[in-house]
Length: 185
Image (cartoon, rainbow, N blue to C red; front, side, top):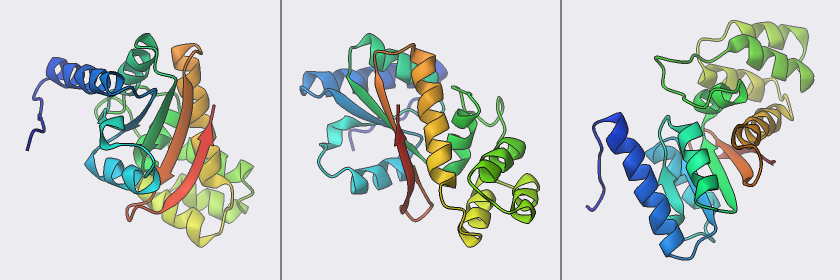
């Protein structure tokens, strides 16, 4: 298939660097970094103006990938993912592996409250089982602005992580590929 499946941290990081080098060699100034295959597939559906080579799976290596984008002088990185991984980035985690970071329901409840969620909805979010569960709760309660607020925090944290010099856009999709929110820093 031509797809490399690295089996070590070093190999995975090197595959990210190589994919970014392909983007640059193709004359691209923007890259879409995704948390996995599904988020990549969905991002491609929403960003049809970009060629396939612009899409790079970063997995859990958010910080590493963003720093590499900046070092290689790319102009913009779009982070595309689903609520679980993006909620970790909203907290400031730039390594999102399950072993090193959890979905912070308290943070998501705080975001829901600032987005106008009723107190009962905020309590439901606090006690949700997963990020996906939180998504269902806020959608059912029609908490407009919640997904935008998550994306805005991710974009701000990513921009802060690299210290400027790289525009960061964030797309949050659901498990069917529907775009729920986006923001840019």
